[in-house]
Image (cartoon, rainbow, N blue to C red; front, side, top):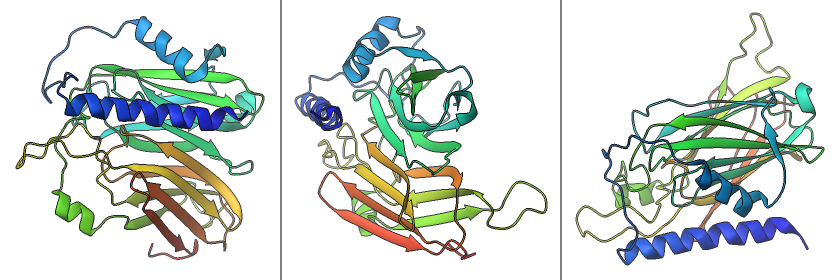
Length: 286
């Protein structure tokens, strides 16, 4: 039996339970500016580890993966997280699981990379609901797991009000923008083997824990749950996301590009809506 569909159903089930308890008033929401002084106990991670990875051994990062995140977030609803990968340390990295220990739904996203994508950098923005460890667990091609973590001081990110009202958010739902960055090396070709891009998707990514400031009712969960980025017929990466990905999902990544082949993005959300877009890589106005 394939374990991935079971993990997918398990994550969606946990999200549904969290939203339901919030609607019934049973889930304690932290104020956006609430202060905490203690570091979460390792027992939290011990429970999460068995839920997500079972009894698999998770090794230290050992240079395979590196994480950058603010020690104290300026905005708990849009906490930047940067991941850097070094395949020379342990072979190709085929997947990364991003976890926020103290979030209502701790598994923020699972990213899977194409076999020849050569992804070396991935950044996104997260909601962080309480002082928490943010963890990235990389799986290499040999099946081994390597973990790195950063402690982030932030509160109330999952219940923070949306930046845009719902009507405005729905009017631009699914619109995408792709930005291609110039090469870092002086004198390098505009489209060399390593290309860095930033994908931005308009979507409220409602967590189900946010309250409508006018009606005082909770806004139903509605977020991007699936994402596929490819170039030509070649897979770059996929994402299975949850409520911890911030409003207007944003992904910056560096990979081995093939000049002249189009970049294609397909996304789907929890309401069954699908969004697609395509860009020629050589275009300077993406």
